[in-house]
Length: 124
Image (cartoon, rainbow, N blue to C red; front, side, top):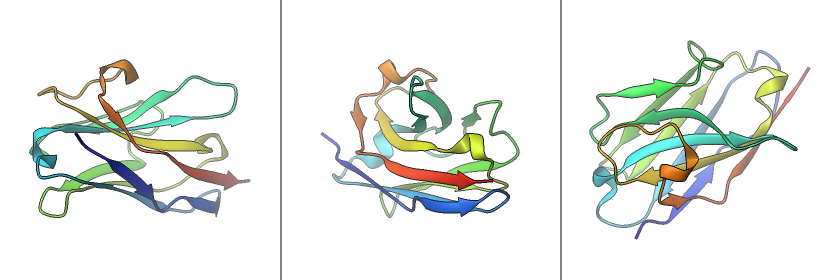
């Protein structure tokens, strides 16, 4: 089992940057594909970015390509989401998730473990 704890959210002006972190417990972090999702009020949870077990493969939602970067440090059991050029429409609760699959999955239902989420608010 994996426990996930996100951090790094906050309030930022449009055009600014934030770096989210997700720390995982357990000794098998490198056995999980990791994903970041977000959920805005009144909307469904949506895929933001994902990274394979070893970090060689990544995938992004079209809305964040070129602005967000996902990375991981398996020695530190941590996955990151660097968010640049933030827009008001990026405002949401951001969740990290772990999946036993070998490939990056784009649907929330594929993920086995979830963090509690961290709020990101981008003001215009």
